[in-house]
Length: 226
Ligand code: NI
Image (cartoon, rainbow, N blue to C red; front, side, top):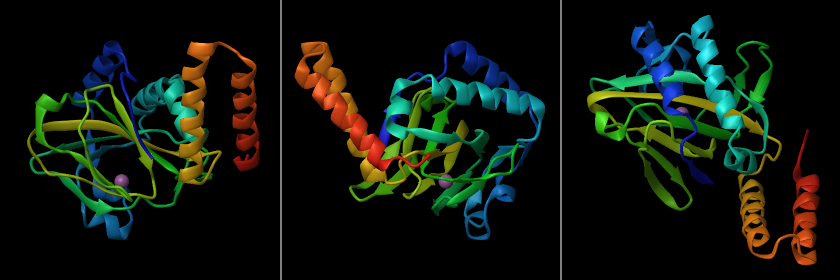
């Protein structure tokens, strides 16, 4: 499943993060990739051990956790600390899949990567190229969003970032382990949740709406692992 979540970050948060990114020291992004991905990864990444970077990563993580769409679509069990990256001067990241297991920066505990999230920090007009291309069973999707907006997609999908031929593309990205491992089950739960939401607006809490809500929770009970 792919989902666009608009306005995750406020303009004040964006300003603060971008100010920090302008002054920060960037590292070669290939350092944090596996052997196969490293050959395709040509970007810059912030050292996630810096306290100032961690503080801003926490701002991004907390902002996502306040988004009802993120909660409903991802059903997060563990949200890894976001990282920041920068593509410029032809920088790109060729087709790859994200590693299935990542380790929490603080606790070093393994986290299964079910859902990937990218939060765009540059406006689309600020750079040429740099589209995030996500391949799933329905084909290729091209994503280039307004600064502050996020896209979530299944971490099982093949994806790439097209070369940035002009300007600078800044973004935050993170992985989440979901309470529901299966992408299709998560997708169905999300669709059901959104349908109940719309029905409640029309019918309030009619007996049918309450019955549907009960189906939603019973399915969630069947499919979650905690
Ligand atoms: Ni990736």
